[in-house]
Length: 449
Image (cartoon, rainbow, N blue to C red; front, side, top):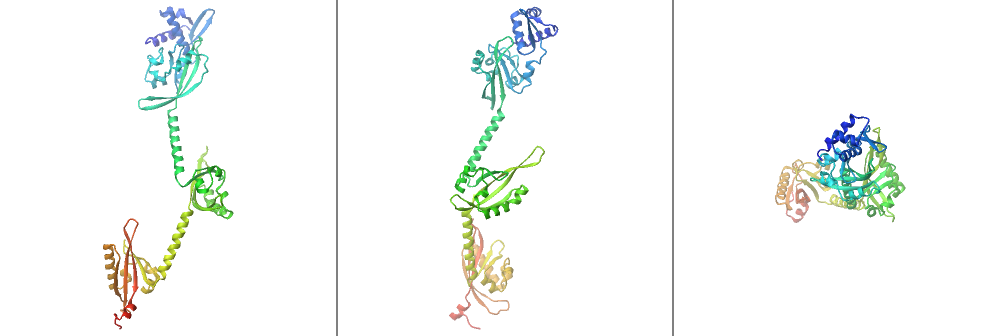
């Protein structure tokens, strides 16, 4: 087998110097080789497209082909190609398949695939194809091969081939589709992850065309809206709104649609099939690509929405409860003040505290105690704050309060209560101050001046 390339080369050189052609006998005699061997070499050159054959009566004359050699055409292909004769031997193998299998033509031509490095592409069905010339060509299948630690995928096509001498054979074309298979697998995994994600999250994922018609909506739409995805696809969100709500919704998003930008979260009222109204919070982002002239083209929109009915009820309840508590604090006769612990500023006063101190809250809020209270009372305030901060417990104390001129001294009972954050850190001290001057006078414990 090692002499094949040399003998084939000698035959092509001989025919090049005899452009009128030579018979098998003439070639065998000139090269001093066996006639059958010369015929075999010529068959290989004939199949490879390097020589042509003409018949004159009983004589067969061979001459160099003026056509592009088949091996040159095969090497120009990015596919892996090998050709087997009727005996199942390799008579052509392009550079791509030799390179992939890390072998040479010397170790390949004239051998069955299973005895060469091309054995990874050999399988028993090849014999069936060779022995059944009438079999329809074009069989395609995907085969998986391991080369080292890397997987390779090929789309294999087997074509029945008939050579010029009438002998059958097969051509095996292997198109590598590894990147395509891996990309499809990644896409499948991404789609599976997306389906899992949109099935598990409570938000409804949606997509719509450029006219606003829904083209996709996730399965949880049934739970949120009372409608299946099939019932919502093709509709617009405004189809599920009352007329006034529809107008308000469109007015809100129209500037973003005109500018082809994302619109902010929009809260709107959605009508379920049973007549129940729910509040949804909906976001939208445009889907834009550039055309051939690099001009932006709007394809549609995508976004998400959620049912915020219960949240709105909770917010409303909290607001009402806060207003109720504020009303109580504002109208009780005791003075209420809140001190922030970070910088010991006073951040809240109720109406009673504002009236007792004699300054509007706009001035009081943000001030420190020593800017508001007389010196003695400011020192008392600071000392009680330190005790509460150290013990992190409530504290009660009584102290006299005298204004700057010393007139109308008052006896004040103070209770300080620490307020903590969710992480257990003291953030504020709530002070509730009661004027007990009259109470002391009534008890006769405070002399009348």
